[in-house]
Image (tube, rainbow, N blue to C red; front, side, top):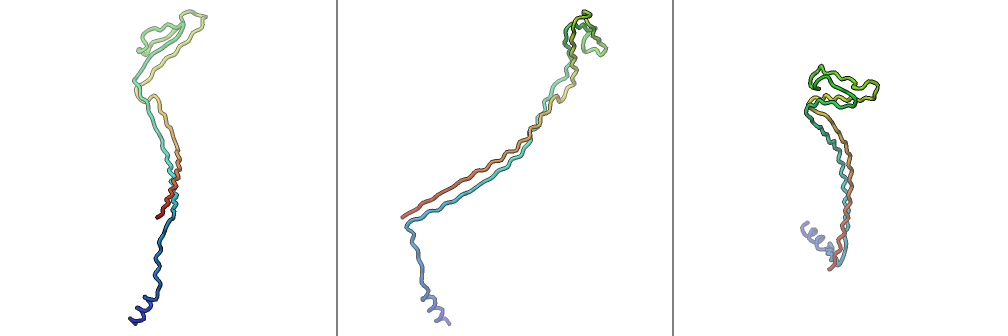
Length: 112
């Protein structure tokens, strides 16, 4: 049995390849998906104020009982009163979806 195995081993042709030149190409594709939300809150202090034309206040704006009257009856008038508490005065939410695909191709050429 040992002799038969040795005979088969010696009878098998040995293949040795010698490359003289060749090339290899590789391609890699990468996909990236980014989903994000940017949340912004703006804060402000408390503020009380008024502005207007043809208007006369009865006292300071900080006094809760202040009244406003038209200075010249019959003329146009405008009144704006702002009374804002301290805290968040504006909220902004920005949602983004970013998709990126990159492809890299590599070519190697060799020779002896």
